[in-house]
Length: 373
Ligand code: COA
Image 1 (cartoon, protein in one colour):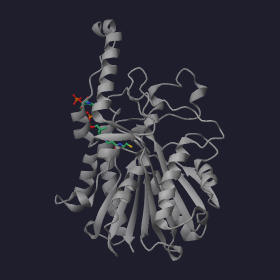
Image 2 (cartoon, protein in one colour):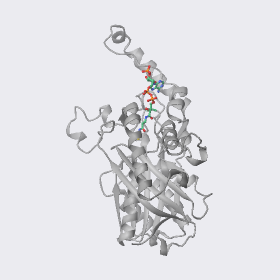
Image 3 (cartoon, protein in one colour):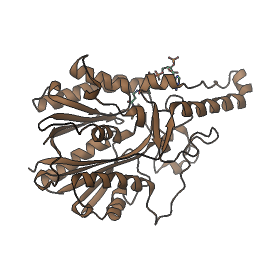
Image 4 (cartoon, helix red, strand yellow):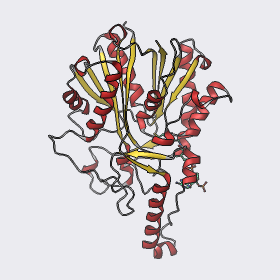
C-alpha cells in the first residue's frame, strides 16, 4: 500500500465580514417589525412575541464573534434576511467553484505542484449549488487537472470523510494526487429570522493536496497514519432542502428547508460519541492523547471543543493544543478543522503528531491522524 501525505493546504476568505453586533442589530430590528405587525394577535395570545438576540449570548454560548460571507447584501436588511446572490449564466464559472479554485491554487502552490499533476478532485461540503454537473468537474475543467472528479456531502464531516476517500484512492492506486476542496456558502442556508441559529454560520473555502509520498515534491508534508469515519442517524441537525421541494408548492419555502437544529440535544448526544470515536481511533493506533502536539477540531462551538480536549488531556490544556478559528470564521461546516490545520501547522517538527477531526449532522464523526515528516 502506498503511503499518503498532505503536502499542501489553502484557505480562501470571503470579502465581506459581519460582526455579532451588526447581526444582532438587524435581527432585533426584524423582531420589532414582526411584533409591531402582529401586535393585535400577540395581545390576544394568538401569536407569541419574538425575543431579542444578544451578542453576549452568542459569544458565551458559541465562542463566535464574527463571520465572513461571500455576499452581504440582503443579510442585514430586516425585510430580506438572506444573501441576495444573483444567478450566473450556465457558461459562467459558478460562485462555489470560484471560491474553491482560489483555495485549490494556494494548496497546489504549497505542494509545489501544477494543476495537471492532479488526477482526482473531490469537492466535499455541506451543500452544492446545483445537482449536476458536479462542482468538482467544473473545477477540473477550470484548473486543467486530469483524471476525474466528484462531489460528496456528509455535512460538517465532508472534509474528513473526503480525506479518507482520497487516502483510499491513493493507497489503492485509483489516483496518485488528489485535491480535496471544501467551498462552503453556509450563509445561503441560514435562517436569519431564527434567534437560535441566526449567528451560527459563515462562508469560506479550504483545500488540501493529498498525494503518494514517493511522488511528493515538497518536503514540507504530513503523513496520514490513519483515518476513521463513523455515522449514526439523527434528526437533531437537519435541512430539508432538496430536489423534491418544488413538488409540494405548499411547503416549498418553509423554514425547515433551511438549517435547523436542537442545539442542546446535539451537544449532549454527540459529545459521548466523539469521546468514544477518538478513544477507539487512538487505541487502534496504540496512541494516547498525550502523544499529540495539536488537535485541529471541528469549529461549531467553543464549549464543545473544550469538553473534547479536556476529556482527552485533562484540565491543563493550552489554547495552542486545540486552536480556535470560529471566533473569526464562525461555523463553516466541513471547512472548520481544515482552516485550523492551515493556520496552525507551521510549527510542527519531524515526528510530531496532530489529529484533525470533524463532527456534525448525520450524526457524522471523522478523524485523521497526521505525522509531520
Ligand atoms: N440571544 C439571546 N438568547 C438566546 C439566543 C440568542 N440568539 N438564542 C437562544 N437564547 C436563549 C434561549 O431562549 C434560552 O433561554 P431560556 O434558558 O430562558 O430558555 C437560553 O438562551 C439558552 O438557549 P440554548 O439553546 O439552550 O443555548 P445553548 O447554550 O445550548 O447554545 C448553541 C446554543 C446552538 C450555541 C449550542 O447548543 C450549540 O452550539 N450546540 C452544538 C451544536 C452543534 O455542534 N451543531 C453542529 C452544527 S453543524
